[in-house]
Image (cartoon, rainbow, N blue to C red):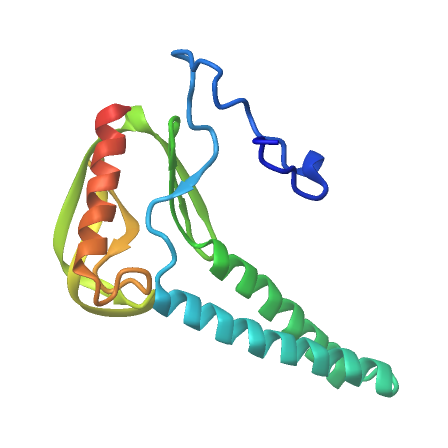
Length: 183
């Protein structure tokens, strides 16, 4: 009677045995987001989701309510584009695992193995304002590669995840430095 009760449909959420020993081959293979989504990003994404749902509902009702016209096709194309952009906006960020780092942008993805990265640097200068291409004064964390080039991450002081939270910026920077040190 002292055992915890199994949840409904327990087979969908198998739990590993907590008493089994871990070996030296344990590794992090799943991508982990360096900075959790901040309150401003969540607010913007939820508002974008509501607008997109309304736009898609309008496009569907317009397509079902009348004949197929150029306007309904354009509306459907705009709604589909909004859905794709919204889905990408939920994914944008910097992710790490034991093999390397992945920088997800709206229209691209860059994967870098840890051995190709020489250092994690903090650069004071111009940073995007809340992810938009409007440069404002700020600090950006960049990855310095062995060939001397630099790759910017999503860890910057004016990020929608880290805006007005300097301690979260410091934790994200330290998290990247620790991952590089352990790699």
